[in-house]
Length: 160
Image (cartoon, rainbow, N blue to C red):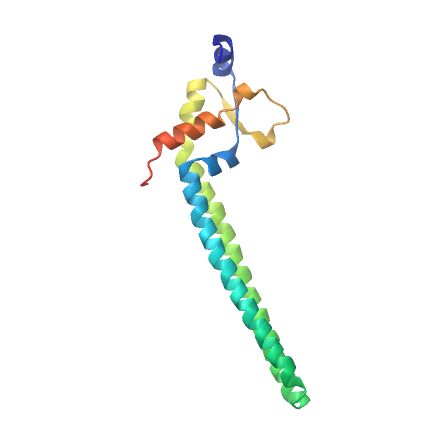
């Protein structure tokens, strides 16, 4: 980078950063994402297991229909429907909890790296950092994503 470009970058009051890249390309972000992915897989496996059990139960209930009196079958079918609704509500709540946990983990990640980003902003003499997704057009020289990723990976230890 030329001295002019460095001076222009250093004096830019506005910098951009790609938050998604920070979260995906730093070791800390990758560790957080990996843990979230493991938890998502557990939830998905649980949903599949429940779905398979319900399919089998529904098939059994369908087979019993021909041999049971209508009122007895109706009671079994109503109980099955109620169980399905209850399981759906429980799994939906687990999904909402997981989404909150994901949002909280991402917020904790950005909270942990805030001081590092503040140092970069101060060193560049900038006043504000805007996410690249919110910028229509900008010069690449105001993007600090690569520098932030390198600094975060250098600064944040693996055992934190």
